[in-house]
Amino acid sequence: MSEPSRGGTLALRVDTRSPIPPYEQIRGQLATLIAAGRLPPGHRLPPVRQLAADLGLAAGTVARAYRELEAAGQVATRRAAGTRVLQPSPPVPYAAELAGLAREFADGVLAIGADADSALAAVRAALDQHS
Image (cartoon, rainbow, N blue to C red):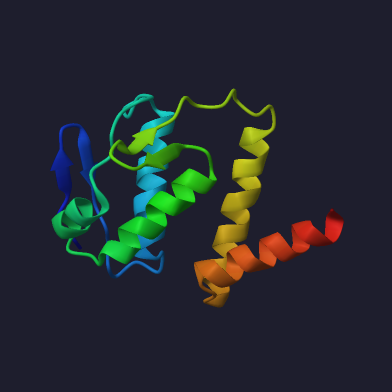
């Protein structure tokens, strides 16, 4: 297990033995901290290289986690300003149901031994078929 990163209120852990990829562990922990308000809007996340060094991971792993958060609208990266937490979107009325479906899907993905990239690609393909 990688050591936690301690930059102010930020303390992350990555379990390198977990079937969940390290970038997804980082993304998930940061998303949870953002949703809980522990990382408020405007909070600057550590630079990619710093967080990677703190966690003993490749910079590309942390960069991917940040890209996923950016794609989800939770953070924004700007030159000279770094990566900052964005104002959260209003709650989605069906968020609880969606989270339940996602957990069930994730359990199935792990049960068959598939990786996160394959699972996400399958979901995107299925959603594209309905668009």
